[in-house]
Picture 1: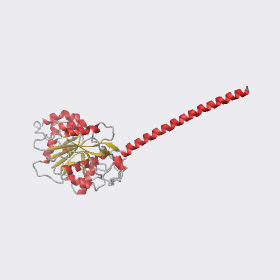
Picture 2 (picture 1 turned 45 degrees about the horizontal axis):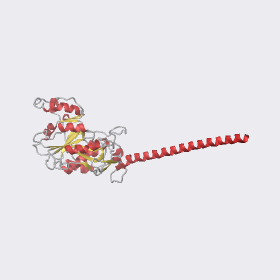
Picture 3 (picture 1 turned 120 degrees about the horizontal axis):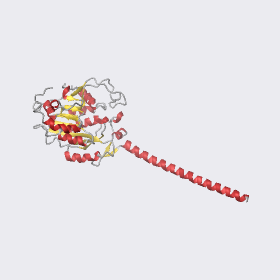
Picture 4 (picture 1 turned 60 degrees about the horizontal axis):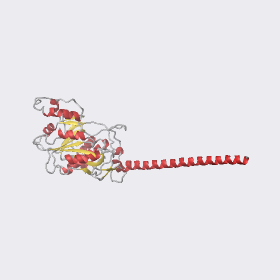
Length: 359
């Protein structure tokens, strides 16, 4: 009897040990499986972060800035994700834009892939190429590659480009820190595909631009200027050294206490001959992420002075719309695109009413 009781006790102990052992094995297997899944997820994330391969609208592979930082390209490697100089490639291009119609004014409008509505309204307002009778205007929007693979506007750009033929895009990531690269794309495109243009206006997409007054300011009937650069001139501006600030510039990119004189990047105009000069000299200078100050450094290196222009023509802060006041301005910054659409008809019909208006 005692033998049977001991046998039953050992049997129960054996079964319990087996159950516990099987549970331990099951948990170990689940842990190993979870580790494998985490490893796979980490590898996918690494691939996305550092390989940076983005599908372009027409099927080519595009390397993001993060990929360039970890690659063996012969480009200088900077903090903040900026890589320049590097021979970026055009994904979308309009190489024939100036071949059949040499423009007096080339509008180069900095845009983001998602700004579909901005581009649509600009085409119908101040970016209308037929806006000023007798003066040839060419309009182009400048974009990079969306930061996110899932950006729905990434593939729509190709369709928009095929419809309007006014978008150029290169294979750099479209971020604020890469505005220098975008501006150099503007200089490269102009010097390559429109080298004989009279004047260029580089402008942001969130502005009110008085294109007619700009052309009057540039005097189409006067001899063309050369080495001409004009806008809202900034003097004695200092680089921002606070890392958390949007405008932070490390000492290793720009070590001087002050920037050279430069025109604020929201809008400036220059003679067509300067595009090639600025683009070429930029290849020899350490680039930094404040694009307008970098262009100022290019001009200083070239020995070219910025024209003295009345500051009131270039309103760098948003001001309330006034039909007669706006007739005498070239540009107003931070002007909402919906408000632009609302006031444009009124603005276009106000020139006769405001003919006697004075600043």
